Amino acid sequence: MAKDLRFGVGVMRGTSRPALEGAARRAEDLGFDVMHVPDHLGGPAPFPVMTTIAMATSRLRVGTFVINSAFYRPALLARDVAALRDLTEGRFDLGLGTGYVKEEFDAAGIPFPSAGERVDHLRATTEYMAEHLPDVPIMIAGNGDRVLRIAARSADIIGLTGGDRAATADGDPLADRIAYVREAAGERFDALELNIAVTAMPVDDSAMPDLTIPRHFLPGLSDEELVRHPGVLSGSTDEMADRIRRYRDVYGISYVTVQDRHAEAFAKVIALLK
Image (cartoon, rainbow, N blue to C red):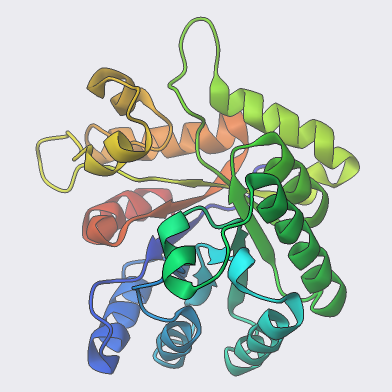
């Protein structure tokens, strides 16, 4: 049975209280279900920002996309998570990632662990949260085998990147990653919520997206390949809505997130899907 679609948006620009409250209310009015806050040194602190957003709304959930788990001891992070769960009356999804920007570790004066060590810490953090705060939904975002295996076995929501290439006649990287999750999750797969993050989409009548962000993260792909990548939407509003229906019907993806700059344009897509 197909899951209901839901939609998330990154936190809007501006960190003053009036700006955040206005952006949160606007996101709620536009039909978004979740507002996400990133966790990067140099950006705003996630928990105060999420608290402000939640206090300004009545339905909108808040979530991290995603916490750099390597920056936190599990017990200390759990204290903040529990407080926000209570303050939002349960409107909080905890997104976890490994952390990947070495310069942020250097700026924080924290040794930069190896990739394997960061994945190990993500697993330990996820297990601690699941044991001590079982009522807080956990999202894990990633693409590698070990991260997806942890997500399949312990998370409630899995954030898919769409893979490192576009689908061709020879293969479908997104389908391959979902098949891997299905095998790793076993009987719990049907209860998982699959998410995909859209990094580019049209914001005007051109039907063409600004590919700046996907070019940065997928430098080996041509623009034509990027337009076909699962994390990029193009075409008319109707065509984008059809593509999201296909994500749900073909891949089982029922949760789509977009960047803050896409909120107004994507709201027209939401209107066709809800």
